[in-house]
Length: 149
Image (cartoon, rainbow, N blue to C red; front, side, top):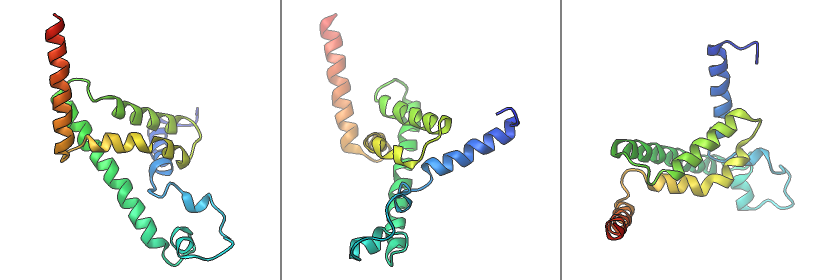
């Protein structure tokens, strides 16, 4: 750590972030055996040496990027609106990123947070049904607050 300048440390953290969250397939092909017992269509899709791996990789990367875009859109929208609810999903995702930057870790830790990613992404732009549910929840909460006073 003592050999880093502020600029080189930021460059290091950038490279570490790319390694930790940069792949939609969560580095799955490098964590499983490359010599399966039988060659099936599924193996051809998810194996790094498979004929259809490029399709699998593009689909998982697209899903990964869509989740992040929707999470960022939701966080920006929430920041513009003010208030803390629904804030927990964004705080959990931010905490995960800090964890991944601080300790030696791999993409396998993202799998545990996939539910939080999906929840944070659904709070993003364009989810009108969820907006109406949040509005109802806020209305009930406000009604309870007024009723108890």
